Image (cartoon, rainbow, N blue to C red):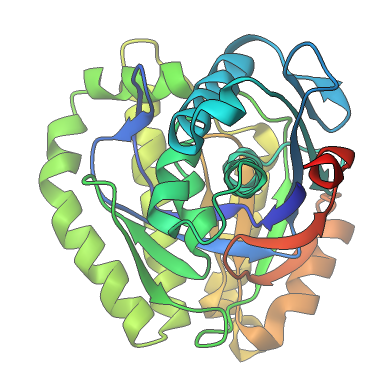
Length: 329
């Protein structure tokens, strides 16, 4: 059968450092993230005899290079789980993003993993197993599988800290620059003189974020995520390669948000914070009453197109279609 899965990308609140291993992107430490909707990736997978080779596309373009290698590894794992019958068949995998002009790596690989698992006849497979497959593609994909607020541990387990129904936290998504791989920069981070300091401090940072989520303290979540963004970029800048990931528009946005927050505008400005991933996605975490005002400010005063988001749910199957092969069987 042909299955279509949907997953939401994530804003990392306590960010991971990925190591591009042979089988998966293994994190140095635990991480915490929140899924963001209505941003989503939609993957459709079908195992069949009608093609001579595996065909994988993202946003209508054939997958090449490192991404193709990762998808091939994911397919190998799925076939190993599914058995001999699926080793003889080729797969067609089509991944589309909403919005269609950007790349959403965490949700792309999460949706792909779920669609592939179900297309291979493994309905009901646990989220933990699906996440282990998705991690080969992207080390944040486990969060996209879980949905809501989640913590991914270095032992490969996922803990849901809060669902989309339990915490309503508006987020403004600003696509600053096109998606790029950050594997090399993540490895380079360990050459920073501040790396050991960060590793020693991280357990406390994890506990602080978990406490803020448990208490539904939006102000505290935003503050910790902004501090984490600055801390992580410090390591990028002071690594051996001296990488600067922040686009000038990110700096411009940070200055504007800080000005807005310091003014205490409308009584909720103090709860407005930025959050930046190394892939150059900018989020602004806002008070529910301030989302429209901050979104308008970003667009009109800074010229930054944006989208108001909310906490997204877990990856899920949204469509199943019988194929000709199913009827022949």
